[in-house]
Length: 150
Image (cartoon, rainbow, N blue to C red):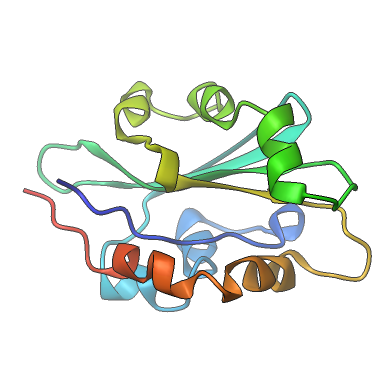
């Protein structure tokens, strides 16, 4: 069974450069220590912005999902995760994201995408993500192990 590398994007609207630079912004050093992140796709649908990154395995060119998540564009921060989950079908959006390979559907599981809010005045995406996962580091630490691809 494959382990997905748990990684996060931030400041998506101001991001520029090639996919390697974007992947380095997930977690500093992650792409160098484990697998390089070869592809980054972005799309929007149903009021959410979607970023998905994946690694193209060396030999058989199978797509390995690293992380996919939706950024809800609601400014209401009350019960943000619950609201976003109700308003947006993240799985459907990721499947329809421009540039996303059809194989990616078979790698998506419930614990492999994260829904967060955007457009919160006075807080950056990086800060928001840090706050959301500050108390859940132990939960995600197992996902930070190097993935094994046979």
